[in-house]
Image (cartoon, rainbow, N blue to C red; front, side, top):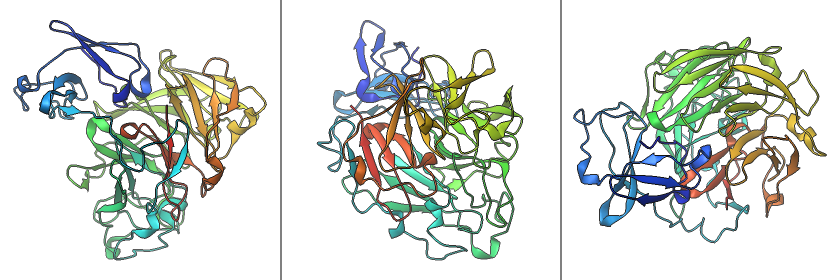
Length: 431
């Protein structure tokens, strides 16, 4: 049975059908797993609902409208499969003609052009500029409950569909009314999450079709309220799930590393004493290994999962030099201190960068706050080298850190970058 990779790259997927079965050939999404078996099923044989129980996130190959080859994914509740979805090779107008590793500005995509009718406190600049980032699903960007401290109180949710010719931000849900806004809390009086500096905390969990915030970095108020409450915005319901549905990450999530495993969407989040892991299938947190020193080692530090070597790399460690980092062995539940090498290894200690494992390179990429600068990190030797791109000098510097301002968007085959509230979205094309 084909194990669905949430970050599957459809353009890298070839379905070779035989009698009763097929095999996936090529790289599988952002997990770059070896080929796995897939069952060839006509869309008409799949019936939604309890009569066809399945594993959430599981995918079957199928035949869609017009005879296209597609993928049918099990719903988050396991009760049945979604409709057959066929991928096409057609990009929107702004994405067409881009060369690999080319940066491009997408016109009229500045967040500053869209505001709620009421300012519930602070300034609208804080939605991105106040140590925040975005989340991404297959084709869209999301910004949720972002602001915090004394910067912005609104907890509204935005979306931008990038798979259209002229993308723009829209408000999916308006903010909590001003008379229900509270200071230094995890949730406002209406039960919805406080606005916060979100740092690395926003991630889209595709198997649950939700924008998750894994902890409160710095809540609206004094700036000293940072707690581990996990909250999720259900896109289908256009509302937040009830408070305390998903427990807590651990201790407060002030500027701490959070990253998602593209193979199973397990989330690794930093606590003071240990690493913790969230499983979307059980919607529960479990303890992982204790830190060699403590969780402050990875303040303002990105992490990324290496799906080939089954480990999590943390690109920084304040208890070492700027070239120091940490590796977490998922299988053995153990940390190892590591040292990055090369003439540019010092950039690993850059404040508030972002990192991903990139299958197109079979290595990691790290985005720093300077223009379009990226670095390639060999996952075995840990050698660091600049990654050549075009038009990078025109990209604005990130405002108050990169964090999840730099996100992978599978349908568009590249990375979207939102440097700040007043900047347009920029896009980096992959090969």
